[in-house]
Length: 344
Ligand SMILES: *Cc1c(COP(=O)(O)O)cnc(C)c1O
Image (cartoon, rainbow, N blue to C red; front, top):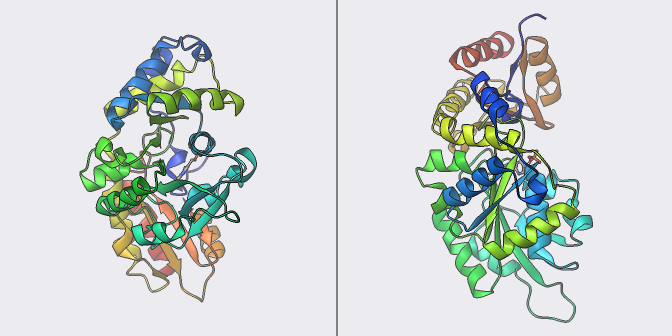
């Protein structure tokens, strides 16, 4: 093979490091459906502590965490309030509608960020004709919003509204640890206003798979039954949990490097006439790049790929670039050199 591509499509493309593979190799395992995998149990306890919740539950994917959380918090025919750019609405194959039988009441946020007033006015009155509001779902960091960190005071305002109406709150925290590193707030502080929250091990943390959902003991007991119904009861997954434990020890603080490199990409690309970047929203490891009208995002992405730089097409005129564990300073410089050569 020639030079491997510089892959900025997503932070999911990371491959487990040699040291991570070694811990996986040595993991003690058991049958997790019987609750007998000691490594999974350790990971679940560790994540519950990290997020300040009673219990944790290991899942194959973040999508399944969201879907099981929605199923646990709602009844068919009810409604979930969320931002219209959120992952659950756009990238989970409409799962909430057929797996839980709920409808999503989507609101137009600012880069995925909702205000408490928006949420309050979306809550349904008690009325024979209207669906019942059952859940408020937020996303932090917000993927389609460009990796923005949800301002915590806003979340606290929304939580106050939720509390008034006795509504549970779920956090899609796929990249919650990015939010923590970027904001300086602990994962437990960020998770505190929520009844349920999860984060992905398979993204910036560099694991091959896995996400951990956390919440109260009753919530997790019910989520454990639904996880089985959704086909997510796994066996000797201590192999994957070991990767997760390793990542929590070694790959959290380094997320700051991903954020610094994303910032570098954003600032330099903003200077090229072919592109524009809203630098205000580059808080973490995601950079949304808008392509000027003379080009299309698809054509630019194909052009870059032909020169060894892979990016995601996120709209007719929009590209998404994501920094991660397998992108070092040299890769950033090389990628920028390709951009400048083609579009400088
Ligand atoms: C990646 C992601 C998920 C879940 O993705 P999986 O690939 O199913 O693990 C959910 N929400 C957001 C915001 C994400 O970025």
